[in-house]
Length: 267
Image (cartoon, rainbow, N blue to C red; front, top):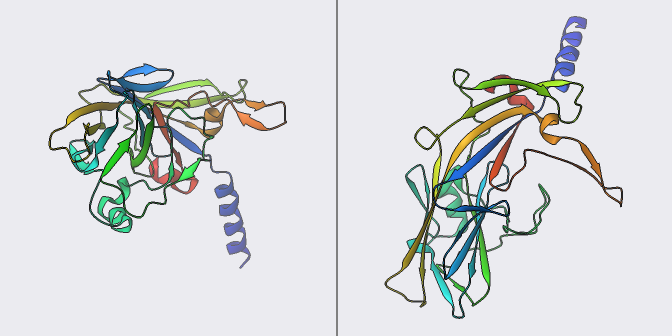
């Protein structure tokens, strides 16, 4: 009995000391521009602004109507395209059915509005719509936002040890200590993830013809590191609130925080 007790205690101590790891995913684009830290696509009529920073990444975007007349988005004729796999923004089904239909790709969390300051993990509002509208009306000089699909719907990405680089660097939170950062880089040809936002617009509600916007993005790198290195230096504001510098955090990137219970499995 004593041996079993000490074995259980040892296992508990080791599990309590498990390091927390995080993976940072960086993206690039083929036809949008980096403006004020966001991916942005703009025409004479509309402006699309993208933000992906969320756990597992979320396809979040806003559409701003620059005109003096209304614009309509037809979601039935629009799609999120994930590695050539078409996922519909609108299906004539209840939301509970949608969750089952799209599986792990479906994001039904708080709305992320690109361009608005939102603390990590604390979002401004949540979607309560039971059945999504097929056509969205955008008045002149106004915008709408949507957060719908995950970009990397997995618990972690298994980095290839043959192609990843290993760098020992000073730890951001404690520069006198060092830590190892693993990084795997990709280009447009060999990236494991390409995704597109394909949207149908019109100037009338019951249109039969549309003009389309097709924005494309792809994964350029994955960095894996100790969470303490990611978190960075401690910052305290005038009110005494504590935050952290998080030097790897970008609106065009996203992250996966790996469960310590999976640390042996993913390594």
